[in-house]
Every structure is written in C-alpha cells, then in structure tokens.
Image 1 (cartoon, rainbow over the protein chains, first blue to last red):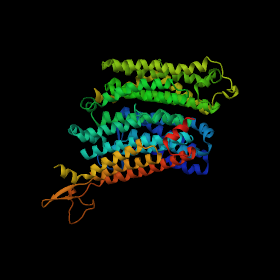
Image 2 (cartoon, each protein chain N blue to C red):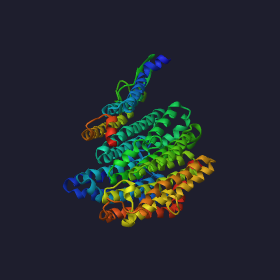
Image 3 (cartoon, one colour):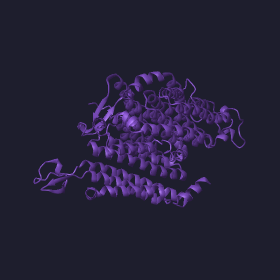
Length: 490
Length: 131
C-alpha cells in the first residue's frame, strides 16, 4: 500500500480549508494557499505518473480497510495522466486568475479561490478513485463547486447556472441509480471487484439498466451531444477565469469516467457487441461534431463561439470512444489532453481581451493583431491547432481518429472529422481575418487595446507553447501512457 | 406471483412513480421553484430505491419475515441473513448530504435570479435575458 494516490486530492481539500481561514485575515493569502495546494498536488501527480510508468499501478486503501470492503484509490497510467492534466491546467489558470478576478469580482476573490480548489479536488478525486460510490461523491463535490463558480458572473450567469444545476443533478442522480443497480446485483462497489463479478451477470436486465443510467448520467455531465444544452450559456456568462478553468477540464474528466466504465468496470465487448452503447455514442457524437461546429460559426460572441466549439470537441472524444478500437481510444484520450490545452488557451485569451477592452463580440476585434501581438500570436497558434495543422497537437489526435475510422471501415466518421476541420477553419479564420486584416473599428479606444498584464499573458503563452510541445512529444505520450491503457480493446 | 412481487416490492413502483414525477417537474414546469421541487422529488426517489434495496426477506416457520435492524440482537444471533443490509443506508446518508447542499446552492441561485429579473418564470426570464 502507498499513500501517493490519496495525496493528490488531499492537498487541494486541505488548502481549501486553510485558504478560507487565511482569507478571513488577508484576502491575498487565499491566493497563495490556492497556488501552494495546487502546486503540491501537481507535484504528487507528476511523481505518481513517473512511479506508475516504471513500477506499475499503485493502490491505497482508505483507513486501512482492504478492498472490496473499504474504499480503494488506484493510480494507473490513465488516472495519473488525468490527475496531472487537471492539476497542471488548474495551476496555470490559477496564476492567470489573480488579476482577472481582482478586475471582475474584487469582493469575492476568497470564496472563488476556495471553490476552485474544491473543484480541482473533486476532479482529481474522480481520476484516482477505484470505488463506484466514491466517484459519485467526488462528482458531486466537483459539480457543486462548479455551480457556485459559474453563478457569480451576474444575473445571466445565475440563470445559466440554475439550468446546469437541474441538468447536472439529473446526470449525477442517474449515475447513482446505475451504481445502485450494480451494487444490488453484485454486492460490491469496488470497480476492480465489480469487474470480476459482472461478466456472469451480463444477461441480467438490471445490469443493462445500470449501463443505460450510467452512460446517460455521465453523458449529461460531459455534455455529449445532444445532452449539451446547459453548456453554451454556462460557459458564456461565467467569469473569464472560471470559464478558463471549467471549459478545458471538467467535461473531459467526465469523459474519463465514461472511459473508465467502458474499459475497467465493464469489459469493452459488453459495450461494443452485447449492447450497442458505443455505436449510439459514436453516431450521436458524429452528428454533434457537425451541428455544434455549424452553430459555432453562427455566433458573434467569442466566448459563445468557443462554448459551441467545446461541444464539438467533446463530441470528438465521444467519436473516439464510439469507434471502440485501440486507435480510436488513443485518439479520444489524446484529444482530452490536447483540447484541454487549446481550450484553456482560447478562453484565457477571450478573458484577456475582455480585461483590457471589455469587448466580447468578434467583429469588434478588428485590428487587434497589431496592438496585442503576443496574445494574438497565441490565439493563432491555438486556432491552427483546433483546425488540425501540424505540428500543433490538435492535428495528431484528429490523425489517430481518422486512422481509427479507416481501421473500422467507417467512412462516415472519417468524412465527419475532415468536414469538421473545414468548419473549424471557417470559424477561426473568421476571427483571424478580423484581427489581422481589418482596420481598427471606430469607437474602439486604441489606447485600451494593449497586451494583458504579464501575470495573465504568461499563462496564455505557456499554454500556446504547450500546444507545440505536445505536438512534438505526442509519440512519447502515446507509446508510454496511452498505448498500454488500450490493452483491453485488443 | 405478480401480486406477490407487488406486495413485497411495492416500494419500487413508488420509486418509479416518484422518478417520473420528478423528471416531469424539472423538464415540464416553467416555474423555476417547481423545477427545484421536481429535482428534490427525483433525488428522493433514488434514496428510496437504495433503502428498499437494503431490505431482506427470510422464511421462518413458513411465514415470510423482513430482516431486522442491523444491530446484533442476542435472540436472533449473528446470521447476516436475518438483518437488513446497513451499507445502502450509509451511502444514502452521504447522498442526502449532497442533496441538501445542491438544494442550498439552487435556492441561492433562485434568490439571485429573482433579484435580477423580478420573476421565476422561465419564459419571462429567457425573454429578459435576450434583451
């Protein structure tokens, strides 16, 4: 037994507590606490990934109770990878959020930092837990923190957050109902133990119902098309530093939970052959990619365009899961990583522009390329990656998805990925045209259009550089981390 | 047979009824407060499902009896079949805490929405949001 898995969410919870108390005394201390907690957690997650890759899976039994009775925390390559991704993006966005929150919500910085820590604690908890009910608890911790974070942007965001509360609760409760069916059929909540006992019960209607409820519940949480209706408003009206944190990682972690169900709890053939789960996810995602991309083209508000683009990108992950072959799964998991970097970068840039100028509508960004050269260079980088131009990382996940589509002989999915790349190009080049070619609009004060402060610009540039670096080292990530994960599919 | 399934497990039928009432409240009602009430009914249905799942039956002298409270009774002995399963109760205790927190957040949001829009009618709010 080792303590590494549990040590990933614990610093976040602990510093959420410390941050609240310290924030009562001095507001700025809450920021320090948030930064320190996330940095420790990132360090542990990185160490965890290194140890897991060299020595194999790590297990922690909470309170010393052996599984299947106690709660087990498991660090395997996939969960360590997710925990590291969540904490890294969390740390980068936290550095960004100090200036952004002081500007947008100066009175509420302390609770916002604490909620961010709780959100990260919930998301890393989902990644490392090996217990079905414990996953529900972490899912609700993350969701409750996200509801509160999204709601602070004004009256529109409160309404958007309320709709998210209702739909998110349906999702969480469906998941709980599915877990109930599994528990009453197998008598266990431990994922590894359930995986042992479930194959004998695959014919049972209770287990089929459990699969339906769990997939529906997690589908709602990850905004899988057509269950995405809560997402566009929620992302649009949330404060910039919140949208920048929630958009890149939250839906991805629920996608990870779905992958976990597919690969670990149930055997892949149950989702592929016995029940048509992966087919349904795949075809809905294919429809979602095209429809959400077209909707993104129709938006004026940059944040709303990015929100619809998120729906389309989550559908890419769904498409990879739906293809249900090793290449498709690699594509989906790599896209979780790549899209987290791209979307974090884009949302932070949208926040940076709003910080300086207060503008959100794309036509008003005309001529900004000359005045904000670094920010717009980062935007161009992320946009090229979203379209899928090598060596940016977005190209490689799409490449794996196309290969997987060819492998499965599914020409429709291949066509969907190619068409959606064109659609991506349309909605991003539309922004780039305004930014670089059009002259500055009348009424936009030129002296306001400056680079955001260094504290906000640095995270943007780190993420933009990350897009290139991930593109270059993607072979290492795929062979070292993701290829072993797809073992059950082979 | 069917009648016995109904009398033994009638709670499951109530669970399904509550789930549907809750879903209808959340998706069919325009008033946000009614949506919230639907949400609470919906969650409660799942709690009821878990609690009912903990029940155990055993046959003694030809009569069917329900399992006892999960505290060891000297007269009954230590046979686990004679006691209900305590674990679902514990799980639901956690889920109830989650539900209370969700309800609290939702009520706070409703207050903010009402202050901002002077209404809790979804249609009215969506109209005012677009203005």
